[in-house]
Length: 459
Image 1: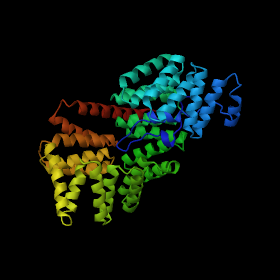
Image 2: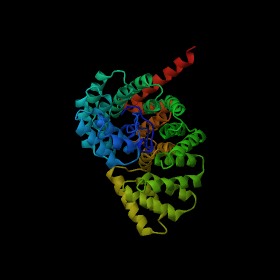
Image 3: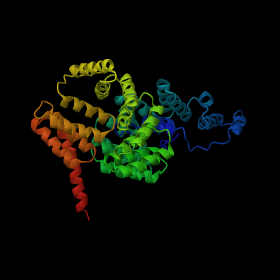
Image 4: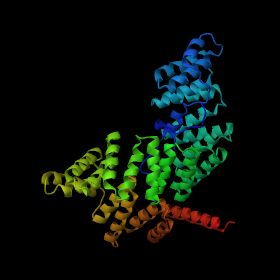
């Protein structure tokens, strides 16, 4: 099976909180779509016993069964191929992919290792082995595997993509960008490569650069739900809500049951003040992901705005059941239930106060900061910014002022609002000139701004 992939329902790995690389599941699962000629399954069944290429026939029949969703039969055929030819690297790799799809990670790893041992030049097994290590956060082994792969195939785009994923996991953002740029240069027609580069750029505060890569991915693969989702996500973060709505709806036309896209579309509709539409979308998210605490919380907010207090409180209660440490849900319940369920309200208030005490929070400004951090994690950046500004107003000269300016600066920067981001970060830096995270962020901002100026001056 080859390294090139196409976006599929099971192969899209996206997270609401921020951009994440198209990684483990995409490569392990969608690699099962092969360009090998797969003939009629019945014909293979008839030919396999007498064909000199019996092992290859079993392997191809296994691919056919995978395409038809008959996993047990596919496993049987791949095993038959390996039994006939114990050095059949492709069948071993395919069996590893199948195990990876089933969550049998140790078995998958063993088969990828066997495939490499059978054929040290078989690049796909290296890619899959590295992706498996990344998915299990075994980054040293992933990096070692990728380095071996680059020795075998220095011009393989998938090798540089794999290296970029390892670097991104290790927090080496600029190095990851460079690796993904190499992957794009080697395979410029790969929508996946452009998406990964876009994600890496967005993580480095270059949201407009990320948007360009996502747009190119959509051009190359208009039916890629992942490409459209990430483009919509970037547009949302740039406050271009109508455009974001169009892209995310495009992703949902490709893949209807796509919770992250439904969630971001709900946030987009909220920003457009289409509250009923936002509520309906969040209800779809909860149907697909009943334990999504952030969706329950946002649904409660929307229902409250529609005057449905009782239903709103039920979703906040469910939010707290899923995540007992969700401070804003506890706070809202302690207030909204004060008149109708005073004992229950008091219970929630005590839980909220216990969390504040545990975290050393003594002021409402500090609580608002925590609320804002939770909103960031949930992808609701506009709400987070509003809460951080409110916290700064309440804070005055409190001990959290530097952190609030820093949080606000990093948030603005992630949204491509670099001038505002730099202003807030410099305010925070005045109070702690040695903050490494702020210094690195300012360095990235300066680089982006210099590149923009150079682009403007270029003929």
